[in-house]
Amino acid sequence: MSQQSIRVENLVKNFGEGDSRVDVIDGASFSVDKGELIALIAPSGAGKTTLLMMIGCVQEPTSGQIWLGDEKVYDNKWLSKDTRTIRREKIGFIFQAHYLIPFLNVIDNITLLPQANGQTKEEAEKFAMELLEYLDIADKAHAMSSQLSGGQNQRVAIARALANKPKIILADEPTAALDTERSVSVVQMLKKIAIEQDVAIIMVTHDNAMLPLCDRILKIEDKKVVSSKVMKDTSMI
Ligand SMILES: Nc1ncnc2c1ncn2[C@@H]1O[C@H](COP(=O)(O)OP(=O)(O)OP(=O)(O)O)[C@@H](O)[C@H]1O
Ligand SMILES: [Mg+2]
Image (cartoon, rainbow, N blue to C red; front, side):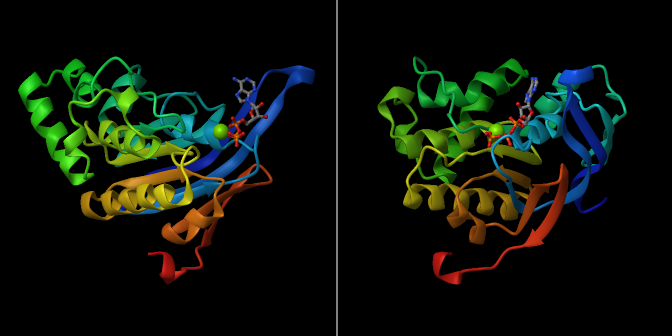
């Protein structure tokens, strides 16, 4: 078993054709290990969301190769007809907006997908309560999402992303709507999940204050991906 959780080789993505063609990613190669929390940074429009959506089997690349865990999922085409199953089994998504369903309570929001995937209500709720305790928000299990603060909702969104026990979490600006204190707490939570559950996490962020909390930085530069170390500021950890 490899330590690598995500591996991308020579990934290319362009949109449109002819004069209107836009090359977004042009030969990206990188990998992310189990247990790593990675910050993905680049200017607006550089292709961060596009890259996450390709790794998450939501958006089809133009060419290249993608491995998720030990499974090669893309080799110039999807290797499985059912990308939705790959997505459900392997990936947890967290977005900038939490996208919780406002008229469902917290626990129902978390158990929706596991139940759709065949878990019983009891099983799904038991694990959801464990997650809420782990994320220190169990007292809100029966509150409606609309009654929670931004930071609390984002923690519920993390619990929802973890409900299927994914080995990969893709987070697109999960702290964009939060102040620095709450952002730090959410990112520390992600780091804890990465370490304790051996999950690989890629987090898009525009907030430089979050970088010292991550293990490594991936940056989109010249349509490729370059990796760099993080300067650790221990005062923040
Ligand atoms: N479906 C699409 N059709 C055509 N062009 C697209 C499509 N989706 C994205 N693009 C283009 O691809 C480029 C990268 O977009 P993307 O959303 O990945 O950027 P981003 O780095 O996430 O930006 P931001 O920081 O603003 O979220 C942009 O130029 C965008 O216009
Ligand atoms: Mg984006």
